[in-house]
Image (cartoon, rainbow, N blue to C red; front, side):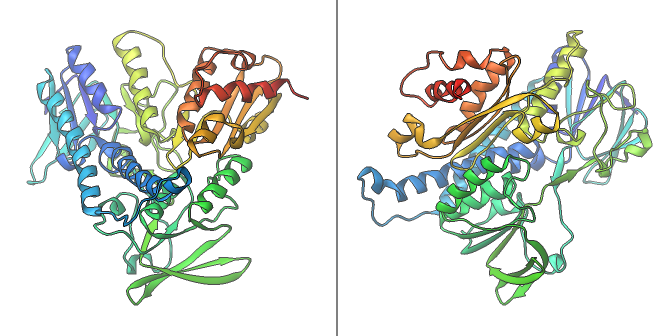
Length: 463
């Protein structure tokens, strides 16, 4: 039995900085990851880093393909997809090398590769690839073991070749005809990316709109732009079965009790993610899970067992890298600086990296209605955005929710070329409790996208 001050299971966006700060503070810490291949977590290996790198390459190709609107003619355009993939792999490898170097040079920090599981309340056993095991114990245990792509129950799925959001990133070829099941942010980002690389892309969704968690007007604005970009959508459709059709995959779906089939060369299943807690034997530690299999935590990220915390995707909170990092910040504040940080009142921002982006922070209109708040909705169409007109992208929709009594901003959704950046500006105003009226008159540099916040918030005072 090896005694430590802290055990960290996983090496994702909460675990990495936490391991460094604990070890710097003198805590004897062990961080456990399954293998070097998975070091750094999902974001680095199969999430944000590789996907956004490929999406950037696809955007360059799209810019060249649409250069004629600027009076620029380009002929004989082609893509060397192998080089595109090598660029992505190098960025991932370089980032991972940085993690390895920081971990190797950190005092009081040990990195162990193997599969971790609980053997009792404060004991973790690690099974290594060579069959040997190590057992650790510590008064503090931090679980950052993440989530994985969910596999839906679809008839025939185990009999055909299909890809999840991780596997499709390793393709050596560009799909001729790509079928995507799921119109959430993963399906939309990857669907548009491959469409711009040259794939014929069809996205199937059971809900009546894409991005079912967003307001209808925001979803419709984005869908219209994605359709103009070449994507095809089948909404209100339930996938019944998949099967081989020669060298292709046939997907049968139903809508209004009518069954229809389409075929594609490649199938991407992007129907959400599920918790990795089922592989940790949390029952041995007495750790409670919610109905979906995620680890239950309180506002300070502690489980029902004192001294055991769950961070990042595995605790059932918003599944974003920046939220996992904020989980780390909360624990650092409380454990190392004797603070009183919590997730209460945390403004959750996110950006979907379609083009245009969808940037969001705070409440949507639907959420504000469910909370029974007294608010006003203000919005402007993208064609009014000066910077968008200049760049040849007058598109999208800007929308904000403002409390009628206080004038404070409750949330915003921005469909725009730099929607994530604009939503971040609004988020800072929300953090600072700056009333909406000040954004209607604040001086922003001209001509920038942010300048149109004047236009958006002036709508607050129009009848």
